Image 1 (cartoon, rainbow, N blue to C red):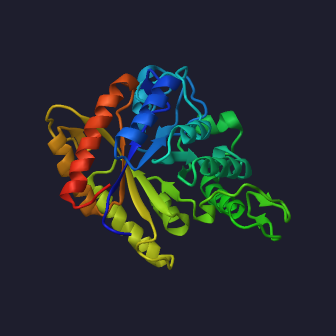
Image 2: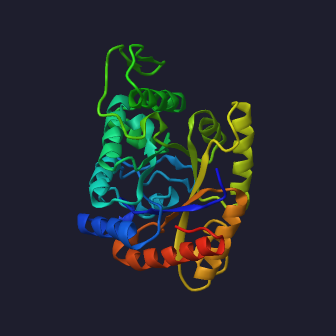
Length: 335
């Protein structure tokens, strides 16, 4: 993996105001045709709940009352459960037909919520429809209420995620008579799935999460790692740990694409906030991007703050595109 840094744009399919098909269409077409972003991303929820008691790994713990401030505490940014959430695999199929250049990412798919055979089929179809542009971010999620709603078992979700990733890769590869067998899922010999994704078993699977368990999973199974909301110093520590884990697993130190999702918003010069270092002036953001490059990242996903109005994102997207273009020019990278 070289020293280039690529940039992704998160297009909110939930946790934003004014989400509708025309706005999602406009933002995807803008990113694809009028910017230099390398990829666009959507997130994953199937359902929400009025009362959330689950702890968000990045944003704190909810209290039992179910009031709106609970959602803020768990990282849902004041979002009521009645707000629209566009299912990401369906949405990516739609975006595949709208775009032709940018790669399409789901970051992250809560893997245990969907049976891996069906998920493998849907993801393969997206890869076909997009001519091999899909990136699959995968993880265990954090919202137990969502597991309960779809009948998924909360306990053992980590090992089950490992099994599901292996099963999907099995189905994406050349057909064999061996079948697939693991503690949580079995595919009988002779069962086949077509069409295969153009990327085959090399379809990128980026493991999401900042925890030690997530880093271990990335080193064992991932083609990438996709963390969230880490400072440059914390990102450097995560990169160092990942390289140690790659060595322990007998994999080369450059086996992973190292990616981070960061809240990003251009505004008047602001005092630097360690939790949101990419919120500030264009110059401030540019300077911090170089710090992330020095930390060893290969990819940065720029995401708007929670509950932003989608109508405000066009201008922000153009400003962020200008910053990333200046970053590439300063670093000698052409898009």
